[in-house]
Amino acid sequence: MKKFDTILSACMLCPRGCRVNRLEGEKGFCQGGARAKVASHNSHFGEEPPISGSRGSGTIFFSGCTLHCLFCQNYPISQLREGREVSTPQLVRMMLLLQKNGCHNLNLVTPTHFVPQILEAIQQAAIEGFKLPIVYNTSGYETMETLKQLEGVVSVYLPDLKYGNDKAGADISGVRDYFTFAGPAIKEMYRQVGNLKVDKKGVAQSGLIVRHLVLPDDLSTTGEVLRFLADNVSLDVTVSLMAQYFPAHQAQFHPELNRRVTAREYCKTVKLAQVLGLHNLFIQEISEF
Ligand code: SF4
Image (tube, rainbow, N blue to C red; front, top):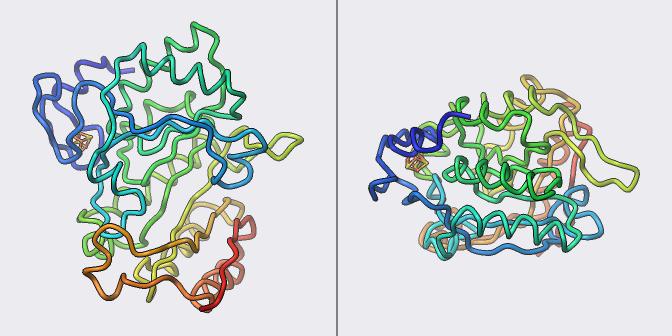
């Protein structure tokens, strides 16, 4: 791993490439500092079945984000940056506690802007007996350099692929090059960990699960996302098609985002995935309204 101080003194952890000196108190787009900032750490049962299993996924929610999605479903943590700064020993204790509580894995939620701090904590936790599989739960907006630091450490990649082109990301998530980076990032994750592998109880041990939140009026450019996965990743890749969108954060000020997805819209995306040959799908139930 490149030295912790070197990375944070001219931060290039994500594609924003702010080059700020976070060790000296400078802040980039994500507002992340020298220490990791954590909103919560607990057992979580709302992830895909192989991630939550029967005993829950050990989530650590990091505060702040490298994107600014108008509809963010998690905006108090990602946009308002609720949480507290923690030292490496505190982060280590959280990891060990989640393991002690019986969680199946350590699920790092929105971790990109704190990767060096997280890697340092994992190294120290391992010395103290930490051995859970690590789930990297990301927006998908990643650089190749950061992903290379994670090779051999992360067992399960759980990225979003929010859009299939850059324009949609610019319109909705405040980033001009989302797909330019997320597309290759997903391919790199697949190269590192391959298809999803589960144990006898169906709990994930390794592999890639790509999440896609279906937005109203196809604002999520779902067809392009699914075609990219089918043509450029693998027909065997596991895809979680999410129907749970609700207008949150600033969505109420944008009429096109200010409603839920209909059953008809969602079913159309599921059918398209099947027609394209993507056969490892997590599908949610949705009620018509
Ligand atoms: S992690 Fe934050 S400070 Fe670093 S490049 Fe990305 S947005 Fe900028």
